[in-house]
Image (cartoon, rainbow, N blue to C red; front, side, top):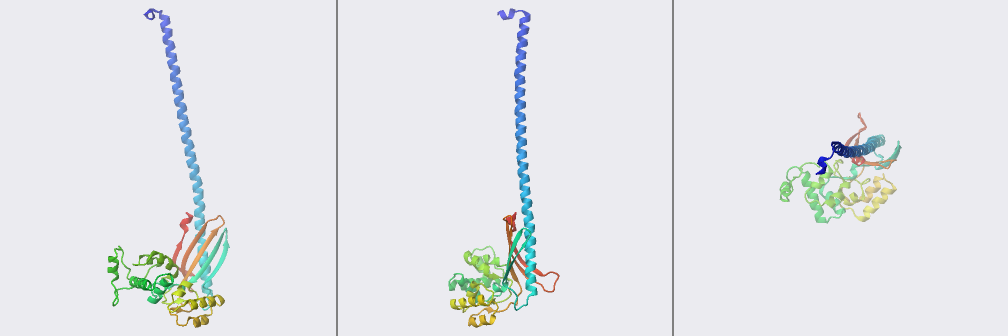
Length: 318
């Protein structure tokens, strides 16, 4: 109770002291808040700076990759023109297919291989024995191979032939949502859609078939061993002899004809001009681009060739 009767001066001094103490505490709080806010701002700026640095680095990398993609496109186009020039200027009888060459341009090496499409079996015109022979050479049994050949013919045939099963009904019965084309194969990849073909056989067959030959036979001077083995009447001994003869004299069609004997489905010469060109571009920075292109050389045209099909892995350069 004595505090209430203290002198007026003492009460005012105590009040002033408490007021000053409160101001110091408030000042410290405000100072701490400012420090925390500044630290948050600095952290945010640092984060933004890091994000921007990553963006700049990625942009520079993507610009470099895009540049390689454009260069690869130009180099592949140049390789196709050189291939077409070789084919057009050469004598038809000694036309250099298969062939290969390599060039170096800028900071890249370009390797080229080319071969006539007549070396492959045309899915649209090949007869049943040749189609069945291909699947047999790839590991299918004789009964299965004939069934696969029937399904390919059923896919490409318009209407129903006498005694043939209704392909549309067969696809529906199998529970497939698609139907046979009932017309020519537009692309060899349609083999994946043909009823009953095992995926592993389709994968093996794709490197040996085409839709650009237009011939019911194959060019035995250029065909792969798998395609030669598919010829009806071909024996392992005859196949070995033909391969040896081709290695000794690639353009001696008379010698190959003598070896063929009773083998059917074999053709000589190259009446079809469609050529498959495989191009590989290796950049000095380690990047690589590949293209699989089918061209049709044009002797009397505005362009030296027409592109029938183009596949590449340019997306790998993205």
